[in-house]
Length: 310
Image (cartoon, rainbow, N blue to C red; front, side, top):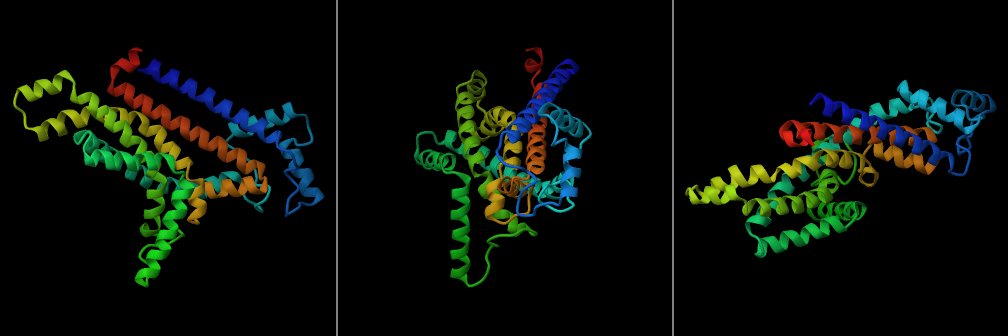
């Protein structure tokens, strides 16, 4: 197990290095000057920033400075937000994105397992047809479209009742979190539903299920104890990447619902060409995704010894 763990950690470090390198050279190929924007800096500040980040040096020297800062955990200073470190932006606003992501994952996980099990249980019948139709819609429709429709529905609903049933935008209470988390987790829930359905249908025809039926076990016990427990393993496998994808994929949802998460600041940084914020958040999100994948791989390797042997 230790050898498997070390191997996955080394692979993760290489992946993070590749993400950081690709981000650096991609941002350096973007036309424009990162120090020229609506809040133009003075010559003294510009000289200090150029000296700190080596902006007046060759690209390979800038790359070495950039990687050295990352190894020290320093993502730099924002070029557009006065006196704000990128580390402070991540520290203050990532917890908001994480809370929203956790709620979306809970919604997606519970919904995916429930609807996937129901579609397998009622295969080729009306519930299966209806749920699979909705699943296709959930996978096909982009999150920003769903977010806009959900917000418009809330506005009409509040006008109809004459009071605020649920907040249209903002952050601070559980009621502010409900609709954005559902919108954010909808696509993942649809994907998990399809995965759970396929897994359940494979389990139904397994030898141990036929043995359980031959022994005369009640259908409810067969379903909960044998089918559901074994069919949920593939869902657990993709849950780690799904957590990271949901947490890092809420950019548009946060922007639509005016949620002060890290994704919203990332979108603003792209619009304002705030290079340090863009590179810092990209590397941070990439490292978070890699970390979640490694955690799930280690858990799955601990649960299933065949993974370690392979």
